[in-house]
Image (cartoon, rainbow, N blue to C red):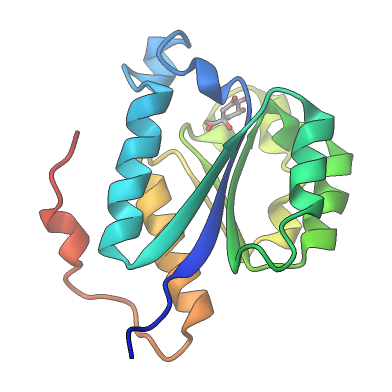
Length: 165
Ligand code: DQA
C-alpha cells in the first residue's frame, strides 16, 4: 500500500506576498512565487504534501489556523512582522495544537532589536532563521522527523541534488 503523504500547512504572514519588492539587502531577489515553488520542490523530495496559505489580514490568518484541525498534520509558519507582537496568532497556533516549525528568511536576531521577540517561538519545535529559502527545507526535514520519529536525520540528503532556483 502506498503510504499517505503527510500534509503540511505552509503559512506566510503579512507582506511576504511582496517579496521581490522588499529590501534586496535583506531578502535578495527572491519573489513569493519562487519561494512557494522552491518549498514545493523541497516538500516533494521529502514526500510531504504542502498546503500553502498567505494573507495580509491578521483575522484571516487566525481563522485559517482555527480551521486546520483535521486538515493537516503539521505547520510551517512565517508570520512576517506579526511574529513580533501578534499574541492572537500565538493563541491561535496554540489552539491548532500541531507540530510546528517557525521560519524566517532573514536572521531576526541580527536585525533591529524589536525583531528579536517571537510570540510563536515557545509553541514551535524549532525556529529556523537567516537561512533564506533553504530554511524551509530544514523546517520540512524537522517536520518529517517530528511526524515519523523513527526516521533518523538524513546524513546525505537527496534534497541536495534538487536544482536550486
Ligand atoms: C520575516 C522577518 C520579519 O521580521 C519581517 O517582518 C518579515 C519577514 C523573515 O522571513 O525574515 O516580514 O519574517
